[in-house]
Image 1: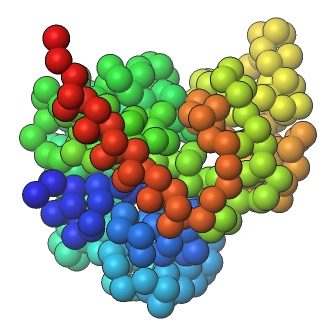
Image 2 (image 1 turned 180 degrees about the vertical axis):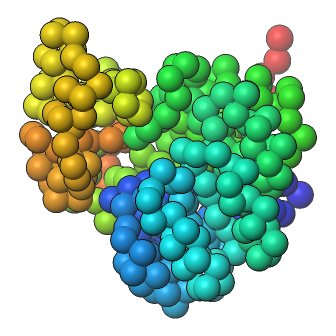
Length: 314
């Protein structure tokens, strides 16, 4: 039995990334109902909104789902309290020290997974007692590692040194890519960008359309001095690029970024001034589909790839 299927009690070793402004209860429940593990993205939710999404998700699916919690927010304790009070059984943490809450969450009977971008942080997460790690290559959308280690390189490096289940993320939008990272040692996959371009994602339709129109080279990792983020190239991205020609200070970059720019772009649909976070693999995403169809495509492609590779000989 697959380690990820067993850990989360799911049919397929596919986890939907808990992305800001995309991963509400509709997306999470749809993925869980289709046999994967849906995650609610707490990073873009006030505490009361998160509670509402958890309650709606519980009504929309009888299958396991979880909450992704970036550990950078000032109301982190309140978020943790809501997750515990609502009986959430799976938590993915990211962007912070896994030691902070792992023991506490596990004492409450919660399965804890931490997202990392390097072997060093994977080992720290394992030492902190997490049940699994997500190793995310720099192809991924949103915030990721400064080292620019690709998924193809990161997965076998991490697999060689850790004992706990390993979930691959970054650049995975097809069953063939899923097969590839599992061949390299991953026990399952976490997929973000492909689920942004789903009917159930809460992100703005205009943003989804821009994702499916994206071509190779239309994203770039930037703002490393603040928190590295992969963005679709638009007017805001160009403003950032222009500012870099002037040797900006960190304060200059913070001033340009301002507040709520990701919400403005991905949730409200301002494709010029908004921060549009998406992965390199957007160049392979050509259609907005229901989650059930996306999941079916992934599994069909995975099986076809497996059959094709079985026939390869040298």
